[in-house]
Structures are given as C-alpha cells and as structure tokens.
Length: 495
Image (cartoon, rainbow, N blue to C red; front, side, top):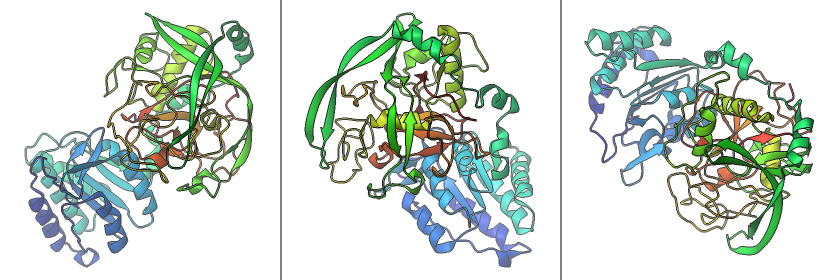
C-alpha cells in the first residue's frame, strides 16, 4: 500500500513495488505469494484491502511522523495523518489473518510498537529513512521470504543490504514481536513502578488536608441531544492547594464518596462491548486534580529529586505553562506522583479506572457530563465529527490551556472530555467481568502490562470522549494526545 499525497516529498514508490514483485517472482515458493497493490491510499482503503484480499503481510510505503502517525490521503489527495492508537485498534480486528506488517515509512516506530500488541511481526522505522535505504530493505526482506526463510531472517537480510549498499541506515528498521511486547518493559521498572501505588497513610493525609480546605464556585452546563444549552447552574466544591514552588500550585478538588453504575448501557449510541457489563461500584472519597497536570506543574516536579527515572522538563509539543503537559508515558506519570509524594508528604497516585469514571460522571448517567452530547463550545476535540444530533464545530488541532471553557462537571473538575487522554493505574482488561467493586485499581486476572486511557483528546472524535469509553495503550510511550491528572487519598490499589 503506497501513499504519496500532494505536498509531501516525492518518493520512489514505483521502484520499491517493482523490486518487491521481482523478488517474489523469482521465489522458490512463488506459488505461495500473491501481490495486490494499492496506491494513493486513503485511510479507509486499509480495511477494505484487508477484507477483500485477506493478506498475511501488509506492506506500507510512504511518509510517517514520529508523533502524529502515518501519512495517508484524504478525498482531495491531501495528506491525512492516522495515529498509532487508531492503527493499532484497526489491526486488532484483523489479527487472525494478518501475520506481519511492514511500515516502510519515515518515523514509524511508535506506530509499529502499537500494532505489535496484536500482530505477530511488525517492522517500523526509528527515524527518517531515505528512498534508497527503504528500497534496499524491501529487496532483502522479500528476497528472503521468497526463498522460504523466516520473517526474522528476512528482516536481518534487509538491514544487511542497506549496509552493503553503503548507506548508514542499517539500524533504522526495527522489528517488534507480539510475543516479546510485554518483555520490553525492564524488570527494574516493574519492580519500582508496578502495582505499588497504595494509600496506606491516607488517613493521616486526610487529617492534614481537612485543615487546608477552601471553597470555590463554578458553573455546570447541561445540553440536549442537539447540543443546545438547557440548563446552567452554579455550584461550589472544596479543594486544597499544593505549593510546588516558584509560584506554581496544584489544586486538588474533594470528590465525595458514593455509588455509581460503571460502564455504558446497551442503549447508549456508538458504545463498545468492552464497556460492559455495567456494574455498581462503591467509591470512597478522594481528591483529584481540578485540571490536567500543566507544563508549569510538570516542570516544577521534574526539578525535584529523582526517585526512579529521569524526567524531561519540557516534553510537550504544544508549548505553554498553562497548557496540559503531553507526550507523557505511564511510567513518567508514576515518577511524577512519586516525586510529588516525597515532596509533600502526602500520597499521590494515578486514579483507578473506576475513580476516573466516577469523577467524570459526577452523578450523571448520560454519555457526557454535559448531557446527551457535546459541542466544541464546551470541550476540545475533533468537532468536524459529531455525536448524535450535535452540530459540527471547531477542530482546534492542538491542546487548549486548562479550564479554557470555564465550565466544569458537578464535582468541579474541568476538561475530562477531550483535550488529552488521561492515564489510569489499572492493567487493561477486555471487559468488566470480575472487576473490583470497591473503586480500587484492577491488577489481577491478567498478565499484560497494557494500561488504561480515558477521556479522549483534541485529536479524537466525540464518540471517544464519552464518560464510559476505554482505550488501551502501552505504558512506555507518550504521545502528544496523552497526559494525566493525579489523585490523593481514596481506595488502595488492589493486587
């Protein structure tokens, strides 16, 4: 599959395709191979090609972006980026047929890592790869497959041919194996960062916090299915302020304990099966960040004494002290709260998935805490798409400063729909069968290290911003659509 949209650097895609066909034409086992090619690829062409041809190997040639994804084309021939999370979700559906994916495109390592959750063999490029190197790799890879060699051997031959050609890019292609996906996480990280998030000293913390509580006021808006405002009320909530130094503070809002139905009902529009079964959860009271962690807050904590790993003080793509910090991996978020806990003497952590959804819903049972739908006047997401009968709106294509929309949910929390995906503590489970009912994070009954993201982002359609929507992602990568917020107190992690 080849894509070279208008406005992107011209690639030698015809030559690469010819070399692949020639290698397989000469193959000892050529009767085992059938090549189908598609050029000027639109994102929708991927699933159509897989459905039509049921390939075992998918080879993509074209452009890529380290953060934004692979470059496909829209209906007008212009460049359209498809991100790693979306690609991984697509390939998950076809994992029974597809055995190998080759992303012979610039900066495709993150996309390859994401897809390798589901596909046995995935090859991506760790940096920009030149036309000549990409073609040499394709020649070696398919010559080896045509000779009946393994995919691992074919990958190595492709890399060797780059070197033999005198091109200093033989280390650019990277092979990821599904069976080794979880093993890539170092044992020291697992020991230091794993499931040790507890709140053993929450009681003493709460005694201190109660003395620090203040009250703030905020507005809550409700809209109907067409996105029209039908109610606006003022509320108040309690919070305390954590001083991070250099006039940087962190506001933590008191979330009252209670019960709620976690997941989505079967009647909710565009719901997913992994949001089932709905189940009642009892959540103890806790404190949650009023906003996403900002870049100023991140920088202040990154300057504190290291606990387990280094932190880049300025990782974000979209700069601004009051913009949320992004490109944060799960492990980096854990290091942040570890340093914050050491600095303050309180126990900070990531929210459990149950705590996150409970805090997001704030007593609502609708798809969004705004009501039946969402609009771009209330949240930052890709409003070129709509949910139910809401109108189209502005697609800002970047993060917005925290609290920009000046409306909160009924608990006093901002930006839980859109802006950035938020890490949760839990390990991924494909449904809620056997899930804890006490609000704790869910670590048992699964042996993977995949973690949970909630809330949607500036890049995603509104359906993915719903209160119940769940997304999984590997913990050692951060993208410019991923951030987090911290909690203090509440339910202990369940192991």
